[in-house]
Image (cartoon, rainbow, N blue to C red; front, top):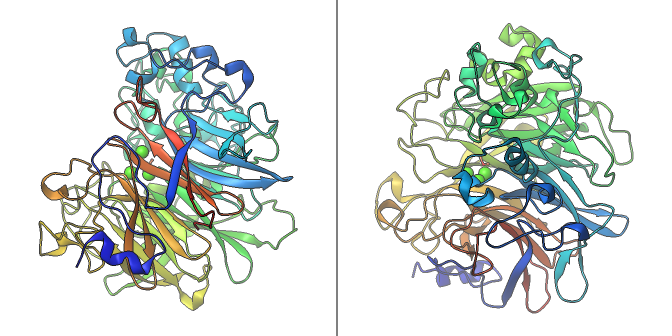
Length: 565
Ligand code: FEO
Ligand code: CA
Ligand code: CA
Ligand code: CA
């Protein structure tokens, strides 16, 4: 009675069972195929650049689709469909020559890795045989760790972000660890810099500041960048890490535009950015900081906006807030200002975590994606898991007591918190919250670890991460969790994408990923007949069946040609 099939009536597809294989599965009546894989050419000059044995050569790394696809958005521009999509990080054992044994051995190998990450902007079109990348489109663009950017907002130009290459602190290079995404109401792309700390290391003495500790900066860089590029060397450029960890805006309609790092939105390990509007027209951006025991934030602009009006200042002049959740299912957004924190504004923004601690923000179970309901004033955040809840604080961070929307110690399964702003106004400072779902395993546990009532043996999952609402108000949930299918995770199988009805609570499994992969990133074609889904770090030789595994964006559609969201 609790099988996947029993839930079929709630949705217009038949929910699927778990999988443990190296393939994608979708419901009966649906089809899928890869749209673009790591290494696929964006320009003709990169045709044949990818080799199943050796990957992509350094001089072609910024001419092909990047590695480890993540957040993405589709834009309609002059009758064309253009996707902007993140490439979060690299898998050096797969991406580097075998002789490197997983660590770059030269500046050229560092460049290879740098150029495989960042953002891809690409035109896509369906020329009768399903969607494909439009090679050589004037919209195609690769943005990576060396791309010229600009900064705006109160921390731009401050002493904290000045370096020897940029003494004005206004023109940083590169966007890195691009995780989740967002879009502005004026149709630009927001790419969110997450685990930037891991790219920095030291070849000599450096000052391990409170800020470095709180953000996990120090020691050895995960890809040895600092050995070949002084920009990543903390002993040479101690302010370079302050130029990363921002929400960065890219105009997909103008391939010559410089991406803009918006310091007003705060610096932390950004998951994604969900933009909505306050009742009075101010711009509101909800954001999560994905680390155990860190916080949820929102930015509210000072200026208001309506369709067709100029957008200047909307993401550079406003107030950053941090969330406090009370046990009685109320909560409030606490403003981070010089008055509330005792810190200068540029310090507040560069070290938002420290500012959040000063005002008593609530430590969360790793806030991943936030999605705002398109039809009512309601938003959702995936709190993916937290093995340390109630046990020990984040380095330099706050104690992490169990409570509020983080009700379990040793939270291996995760939950999704929902909040409704007071007066149905996203500009309000008060809200009410509840848990939309608490993931768990009802076949292993009959306590809180069995999950909330809408979790059944037929739909169970762990570690919700990516989330997006479709136009009908259904919540699509993507997982990045334990795919061992054993012990606490028995019966959950590979990572997956589910669909939730947020009115009834019902949740049904729509797609299963190949073994090893997480599912992350979701957008739709203009006509909503095709969903584009990101498959990151697949195992085996997916999707080619031989050679290296290739992170890919896939297209999913209904055989009957109806819309799917
Ligand atoms: Fe890049 Fe928090 O996921
Ligand atoms: Ca994520
Ligand atoms: Ca995750
Ligand atoms: Ca990931």
